[in-house]
Length: 140
Image 1 (cartoon, one colour):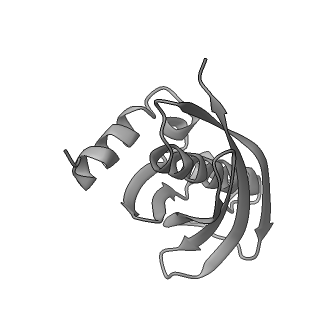
Image 2 (cartoon, rainbow, N blue to C red):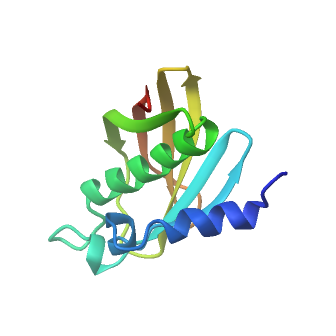
Image 3 (cartoon, rainbow, N blue to C red):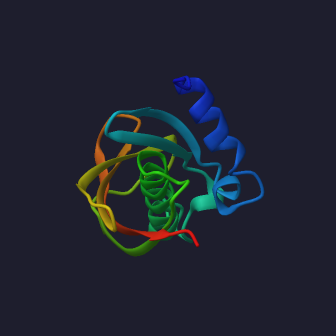
C-alpha cells in the first residue's frame, strides 16, 4: 500500500509539534524520490540582532530537513537515524519572506548518509549551502 504525498507531509508536520521545528515554524512542503523540501518564515523569531536571518536558524532548518530525508528514505523498522556532522556556508542575507531548504542525497549508504541542503529565498536565490552527515544505527 502506497501512502499519499499529503499523508507523509501531514505526518511529518504533526510530529514537529512541541519541538524546535514548531518554535521556528518549519513546515515540510514537498518530497519526491530523492529530495525533501521544508520552509521557514524569516521574521523576528529567527533574526540575529541586526534584523537578518540568523545562521543558526538556517542550520536548524537544514538539519531538520536533512534528517527527515534520511528518515523517510531508510527502513525505520530496523534503524534509527542521528545527525553526526553539519556544515554551512552562508552566502546571502534575508530579512523577510520564507527560506526553503531542499535536501538531496550525495551518498545513501546503509550506515552513513551524506546530504546536501540548499537554502533559497522566495526568488530562488541561494542563501546557504549545507552538508549533513547522518548515521543509521540498528534498533536493539
